[in-house]
Length: 177
Ligand code: SF4
Ligand code: SF4
Ligand code: SF4
Image 1 (cartoon, rainbow, N blue to C red):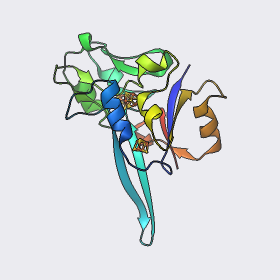
Image 2: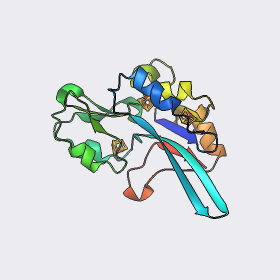
Image 3: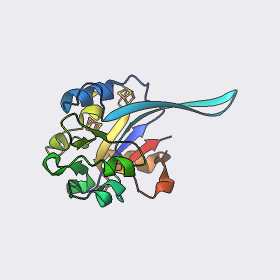
Image 4: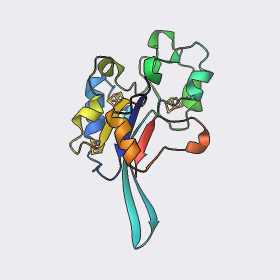
């Protein structure tokens, strides 16, 4: 089992429904977020390409946040999901400093929080809240070890990229381009 997400930058309209769905499903405190939308442009006028990216923790296979956590609070769950056990987190923020994607924040209760790939839903066979709510159906989630999963099929068929590959973290969130 190797969970991954693929997000179609051509279909994302930047509505931020994914952000609201995540905040609701995961009780994210007001003023914080586990996912966010980045609008970027590439190329030069008049050949400009606009890209909307719904970003979150990349559930890196080689994650510095897990490596540097002094208490083991940041750890891998089944399928490579990177999570934080809040009772074990001392709020030292080493993981926040080590993450090249700025994917973590300190919860007002003192522990560090971030995207969990909605582990409470996906382990029951449901989709993550952000994937489920997206009005353009631009996000795909599933098991990369299963060649017939939605995410494996779309990645086999479409060009894709990961963010900051030079960081060597091996992200498991892919952007279809
Ligand atoms: Fe993009 Fe879908 Fe998020 Fe809207 S809900 S911003 S279309 S990823
Ligand atoms: Fe850790 Fe950041 Fe990678 Fe998420 S994106 S697994 S927080 S290094
Ligand atoms: Fe939030 Fe779940 Fe989507 Fe992660 S997978 S951004 S926790 S809704």
